[in-house]
Length: 106
Length: 340
Image (tube, rainbow over all chains, first blue to last red; front, top):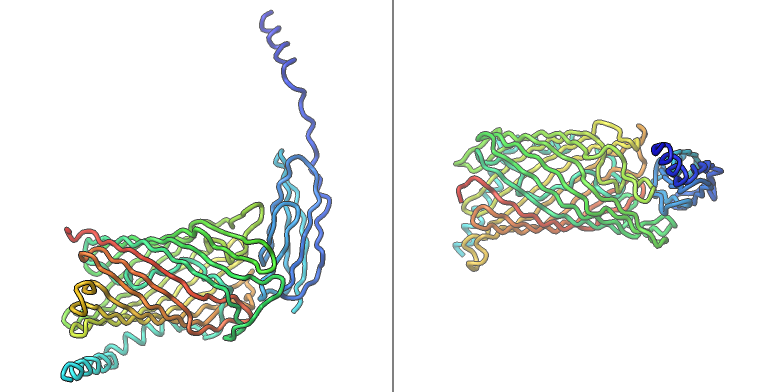
């Protein structure tokens, strides 16, 4: 009897289970798709979800910034295609990623 | 006048000895080790891997002697080069300057009379790029690579005061995972560890001249990388040849200078092009000549303090690259096992 009462009150104290907010990675855009050596290009990630963390990698060059917007500053030596990847991870450890390729012409 | 004539004779003898056949063979071997590749290419700003610490720890140690070396190196780069020409590079992506602070250590042990084993490693407190047109800098930090080396003294003649030592070592990166800061993977130039396994071969020829209190040291180093790292990068092979001319100031000037040695290092560095997913990186690889004045202070025969200022007198970079402007290195060495 006591046990069942205890269970009843404990259940009343617990907050209702939170509904998981879905992770949606809408788009990854670059402000230009072709650039000349020495130019920069800015990338924007649009995503929604709980406590999103953005992780960026570029196949070459340096990425400046953090969060939803970063700028690629290719070194003068670079030419050809550069693949930029953005991975978003939410509070539930769900991850989604998108790629954009920009081309540096000499 | 007599003194000057004596000195001239001493120097003439030094030169003629160095040019004699038997020494020439060793010198040629060191040079061959350093130049066995095609003389072509260079690389983007930061020298990858562990910075090298001067001339103190290059030879073999006496049996059962332990040598601990700690050094700190600051390196600064702020000039773009196209080939061997300095250029003003003012595009949006330009770096205004790059620098690093690196503290390294090595521990060597004289395993046998002719064999020394050594381990070296180090930590980058920062590897920084400051951007000219952005109020922004990016910074990497962390452990670089560990190097395990065995040194073997091939030839030593106490009477003639000369020796020839070779060594071989394995390079192991501290991390295979690229460093990520604020959710952004850092570019290869400022990753603290190369992520490449590799090997290092070195050769050292030393000749001392007792009467002149002088020493000539010729040092060759070849460093290669075996694998592509997680970023698809493989650094090009590096060849270094250094000539050290040292003069001990014993019995000269004042009591203060008796434990001081002055050294001039002339160093040639040649780096092959890096590979990115097996394709050569166009603007990578370099041919550089550096001058490194150095002052050493020896205390009680077991402590050695050394200060080096290193600057380029010639650069050749493929395409456009940020070149090294200068570096300063301070090292402290302590020998254990002499019973002092």
